Image (cartoon, rainbow, N blue to C red; front, side):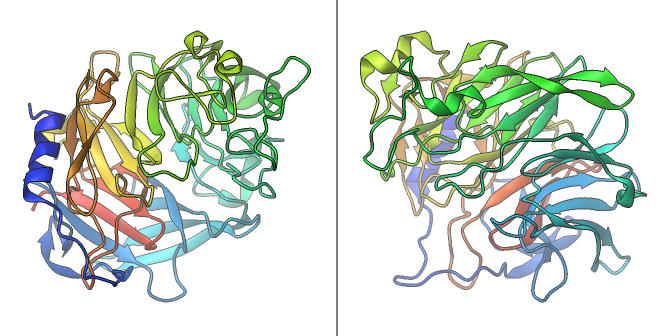
Length: 428
């Protein structure tokens, strides 16, 4: 099994070719050759993998900002379209592959508000998360969609907002729902903490957490909720392992430094607090909060750090047939625009789905090289599937992978929202 450090050391040794000086690579994915039945992009991949272009927007048809992906039983795909960072600009599309390889789009819903996560529920219905609600529907009758969770906070007017809802189903059918923080660090305009009477962040009462909505039977969930896990700035990426554990990938705060803070993988457990807005990394007080206020020794520490500003947006366990060497691994999309992001990775895991970690590890950066994690901190082991996804003028943009999905044939589908593209990892 190839180790994370070995792969990143190789990336540092051979380097990642930078784009031409002073130029920005276009957002278009140039293609040449074949990648498992789709035109092959020129993104340099790990050995044994290629990145094909399923579709890229060139006119007015199809999603403007594709995010979530869900394959239907007939081979069509549902694709959520964020549309923009304002309410009512989103949509839900149906992608149909034609015999000649062309893509046909059908708009199923419009005027949605920042739709992101889409998944099939235990009852067979499709569930879709908007900014302030979660709806359920039969894909054959999207006009009959019903709201199953309503009244989620509306963050669209806030600076440093985190308006995207996300969810996973727990083993008992409960909905675990992300409610992102309404600010970056719970500070006011003077960079002073916004405290309540107890000296804690005033935003913690209802946001910056994962809520639990209990099942009420007959395809309904209780309107009442309770905090499931708190101290979480933005839990867009969540996954439940078949063994029962819930894992979350934390998008940490937006400090204007490329090397800090680190993003995180957390194992969510009921009643635990994970540090936001007081602590970051393993035990570091957040700027703006004193060590006495932060009380970092009392929070639940991450099971693993991730590179700074990786911005993980999706995670799933690979269970397909195309890549047996990846089976059981945790796939993640690192969406951020900074030097460590623009990657799809496959992390090694233990029996519970937790990432295997090592200390004194490295992470790759663009345009070339690698940097060290904190010496004693746990860092994930695995492989980068897309080591050459930096911006290359005339060839491809830096990757912005958002949604991930494993197709029935085992290929890995990716929604690149900044380039308005649907991509597919397959065998060369």
